[in-house]
Length: 163
Image (cartoon, rainbow, N blue to C red):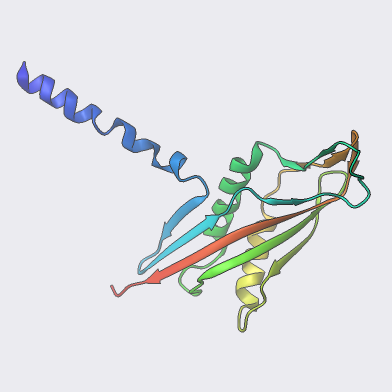
């Protein structure tokens, strides 16, 4: 009986260890054969109020279907799939400047900063972002859909090791 009790206590002591991803939302890891790739998608995102919407008007920011956490998971999934961790050694912050029109479609993406020899990385990152297909609920000014801009800060960290 003691052995059974000990086994149950031991088994259930790891029950809470399964919730690590929820505690570190936006902080994802991907491992290759000899590299460790971390992507930290910072929240909250920076939402810019439309210039046509005055101070006295009610402004509601754009929302991704499922919320910011769903967008973060989708973006990381496609970054992991389309940004080659074996080729790029990326460290530092990049900003995704996103324009969303009044219909909730992404109309423009600009990635900064532009650093030397980063053209292919920025192209792959842009492609990964374009794979996120869900629509956004557009920003609204007094109930009327308006264009909006969002800035998303993404911190990349790559560590390479010998195999």
